[in-house]
Length: 262
Image 1 (cartoon, rainbow, N blue to C red):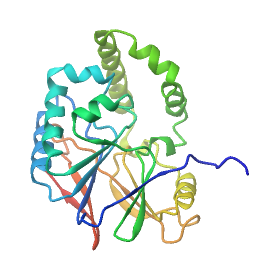
Image 2: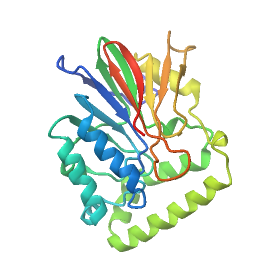
Image 3: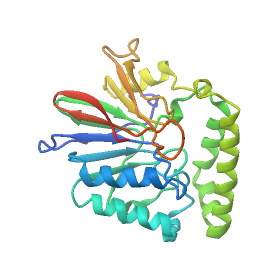
């Protein structure tokens, strides 16, 4: 048999005791976002969810798990660890925090969530992804992604002193912010529907849940490849600048709803 076109998705079967599942992504946690961080802490303290799935870009940048020794990141780890005492936490890496490793995940009391993962709950199958690898029009980023996901590149990068890695992350953050100022949000690359539909079909999952694009919406999607296909795009969180936004996608036996956390 030939090689399958896509990596095999991990499968996670929700226990029958789960009655409420939350999805969030693109928190971009950074010490310059105190209102966003406070809102997240309040959410984690009060959500009724039995499980919270964080689908990538939890941190604005992550340069290695020794970063958790920094004061702000340590506070975030403590915040997540506290939440893990009342609900299960699952963490998927994104394009900003792809170096988030097992030490930090453990410090947060969370469980690593592979990208992609199929979640089986309430008699349905949902494909969970961060979404960046499906933005096929963003060719420059995909070349960068292929480079930095190589074990050799990561080993060499992590061998540098933490101060040097933090400085490089700040330079990349500044460059990203300048790039965003030259493009309107509607010009940002979106997920390629054909490729996403093929992933959904291969996973036998008519529902796709992802973040990355910062364009929250629910729409029919990938229906050429999978019947009744639908995607839920997660909101990013930012309560410290203009146009505040913070939204949770909640899944129960009754279906999906969006909950604003502003």
